[in-house]
Length: 88
Image (cartoon, rainbow, N blue to C red; front, side, top):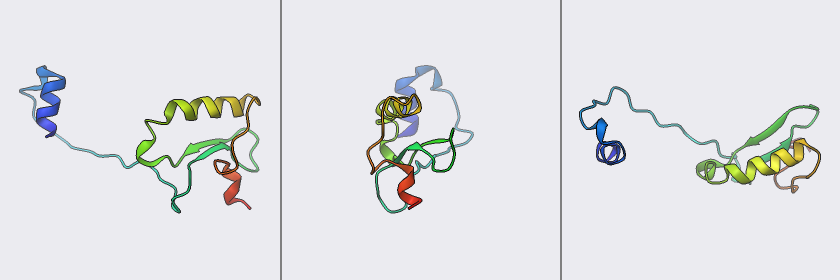
């Protein structure tokens, strides 16, 4: 599968040999809850955007917009995204 897909996407790889195969796991919240997006409690300039699991790349643009708004003081995250939910 990988070889065929790679060759279809980049025909110049047809003669290339696999040297190493790697798969990164996407971070998912341990309890299955929504991802953390927002200010980290007790730290003025620390923010989190993690725990999206396998849909992290799909949600990247929305997460970036939400987090940028939070960082600029223009938006607040819904309570279910707030990293403070674990600090309570």
